[in-house]
Length: 215
Image 1 (cartoon, helix red, strand yellow):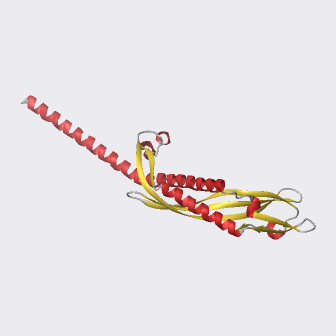
Image 2 (image 1 turned 120 degrees about the vertical axis):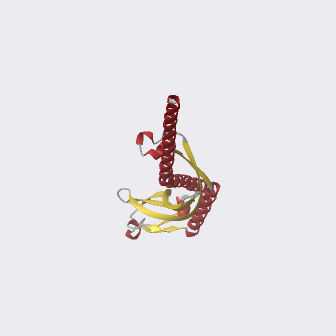
Image 3 (image 1 turned 180 degrees about the vertical axis):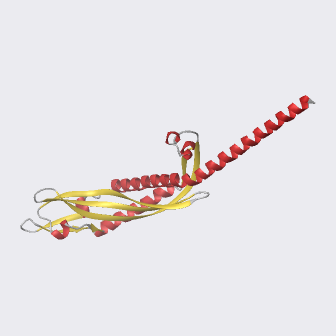
């Protein structure tokens, strides 16, 4: 009889311990599930910006490498007989062609990366800095699509007495849409590139020297 009571008491303790362990596991799972839901969009967004920016940089690099877009082709400085700058002419047809080529190339590069993956360390969900990169990694898959738009901007910078640097810069505006199993979002950013520059000797008319010009 005494043995039976001890056995029953031990069984009750083991049962209680099992219930506590199960409850702890459920609480831990629910905690991490909530943390994943909170942090996953941030990791997905950062990864989407990273891969999209790489696609833009590769598209611009290849387009410029395959075509000779020098300053002399994009712009021409017109001088008067006295040697003063009378006008700065740009090749609008070539500029529009460059914008179209870069936009198309960026779109093709992004299409290659349609299916993406980001790996998140389990420690990132603990809110503890020391453990942020610790533990096994959780793989999150998502799809990515985007739109691109280009703007070429002309600006002028003083380079000393009677000298002005004419910059021709490209800005690529990117809008990315990400979609995963339980989340979708969008992010926009821009990336700047220096296309060409030249030192203009002579006084630049104030209409050019004080203004940015976009194409």
